[in-house]
Length: 123
Image 1 (cartoon, rainbow, N blue to C red):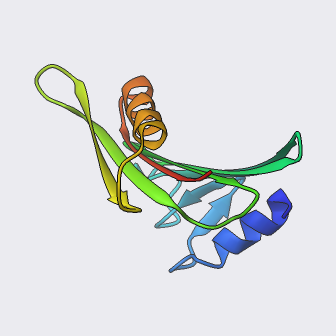
Image 2: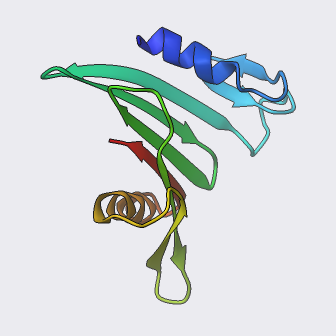
């Protein structure tokens, strides 16, 4: 599946029809709105393994999805920094038991971006 096919598949899931400008979506059509969403999708072919990526950035949150050889959803993890010492808490939202790779990726995303992070993997 090419990045264009993946981008088209995700755009079919849109609930509304917001205004789009160069990968950035403004929900109200107002370019000065704080709720800016930027979607980046791409596919890489590495050593006979096709990796699909989707990164969705909001003003205070980031969502990363990675798929190996398939564009299906898998385990979903959520992570956020906690007060007062900025430690990162992680939980498994979908997919049953927690694994170290998924929870570690969500924790690293939240820690490095200082935003609430969601990480979904099908690898």
